[in-house]
Image (cartoon, rainbow, N blue to C red; front, side, top):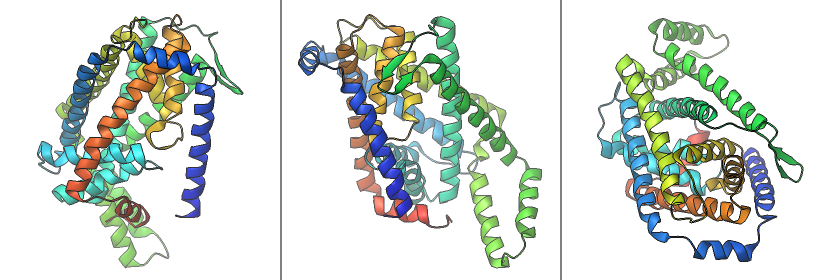
Length: 349
């Protein structure tokens, strides 16, 4: 393991440890266990079923993003996508983002850089959907700007969450503009000229860089038609709404939690903002703090022990589902973490 990776992994472990400590510091484990005994476990079945549908929908969206350059079947993209989620759940440094294009290359022959760029485009749409969901929550729920959630030296406020979302929005806007530029032949031609012009760079290496750029640009090909852009935008919003619906379904199994779909959307937004922070695989710690904060914001009458039991329960079910399915496909497609690490350190081709 490289020194850089060791440092990043150590930072993630420390941060997750801090968040786990503060998340559980005020939890009474006796009451937590008692809350688990009151759960109506039958609601876990529709929760898992609808959660699976959301991931299948994500695969369908990815298929559309790749359709501009590759005519793929759903079976070609679903397995690699689930491998990506599973690797993010059990390996550090977002290994899943690199495992997905590698698995897609093995499964369907799509160039690695093309698959990687399509994953980037997908993340852009997710960030834009996050912004939309936050705007909807802001219109339907009045946030108390004086609200704060204290974890030792860490103070989480609506202003802090809004600041993180604003930064994510700016980043998404920049990346979206860059994606649209990649669709322009004039822009691609300009990049080629710049790469040809690079001084002190051997011609062979210039040709290699241009080939990589062209393969990377292919990942944006699915956005060439306005109808596809509209479809992907609607898919992204639909995926997020359906994910919020799964949380609402599971909340029905907790007698003391009276959650609406809007409350579930708040929970989803806040936890997604929190998991954007560096953390251990599976986002343990930061997800739990996000869940506690979200429920404290929109359902302050829910006590912390119940909030923690709900957050832990849905987090574990989601983690177990994607990990089990992803590892199954990793075995079928023969994708290993060693290959992923090798691909990350190599110049992609």
